[in-house]
Length: 251
Image (cartoon, rainbow, N blue to C red; front, side, top):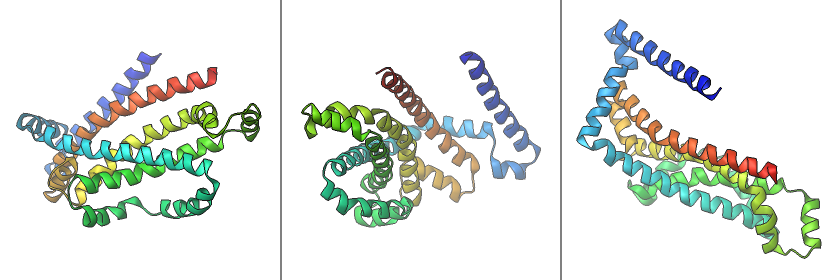
């Protein structure tokens, strides 16, 4: 069954590429708008042979993973803190709700002014994006724990540390993994958008250069390079999440 599904998925991809190639070969004006698979492939090969793609991809990956790590750590920590310290929750929770509705992309220019055009400003934007995804996922996981179960643990003498390690953390594992999977794509998206707005290195800068030249092949090549990195990470986290969900149901 899995092989049948995979075959259909591959067939769909092949059909899309074939339709793209056919459309781009109809007229040069159409190719100037949508590009062509062959030209995109040649662009990627050129980047690989020159080493340009590895250098730019390394910078984008560093920005994305640095911001990802910071955002995950802070998001989970704040969610647990607000759960166990009601006074802090009373003070901070409304502020988080207000700030969370602000489009994160508008923070990119501010971070560039504060931290410059280097890696720091990109990682800061990524961390901001990831923070709210993880925070709300963990917060939802914490709220999903029945109060009756909490009372039972307290009855047998569990303190805050015991509740954290024996009840809340296991209950949030699936929620955390789900947040991680969602955050990976958004981490790279944030890094690329930040580079697009202001950078001279990174995949986002390559895409921006292609856009400035009205070259769809460069833009598509940059997007495909990102997919090559993000899709395996997404599949890896999806497998871990699925296994954790199975363990959680079994227990």
